[in-house]
Image (cartoon, rainbow, N blue to C red; front, side, top):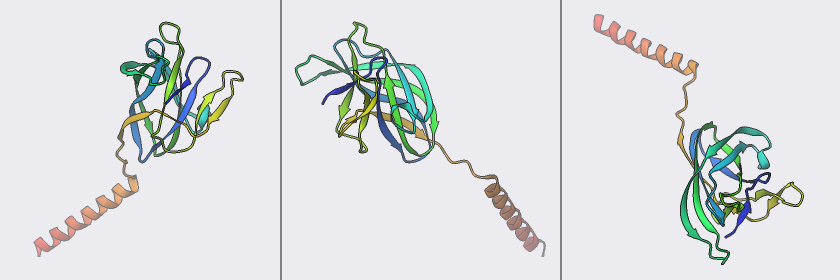
Length: 178
């Protein structure tokens, strides 16, 4: 377990998969710092790492729940950091890019890693160059909460259904009159 830097102007990205059209209600990630968890997060949902092909973005307040300290002996506090949003997305593979300011005591904030991912690499800004590069073999902790969106019937389908019901009603009426 470890983490990747989220401090401005840095950022980190990882992917998530939606099986069906959904409204994203909240996102929870593991944050590490020597102080408190982040109070705000700058988020971007895109079609590729680093926010390229941006679909939606914003700034959100973060609710932090203390989850313990790291086992590496570095005295990092670990938080489950959650922010709310209302974003409709179709089924597909997306990238979430996060960045934040330092914690309240000036400590860097990191996005914690996880063994549970959909495969591939996460991406992070290299501090020395500012370039987004793959973090080979790593996944970042990420939980996307949402509700499936019911598909809206096409107008042609509704017309076909309506004409079928009218035809059935006409046939029943005709039999009753005879």
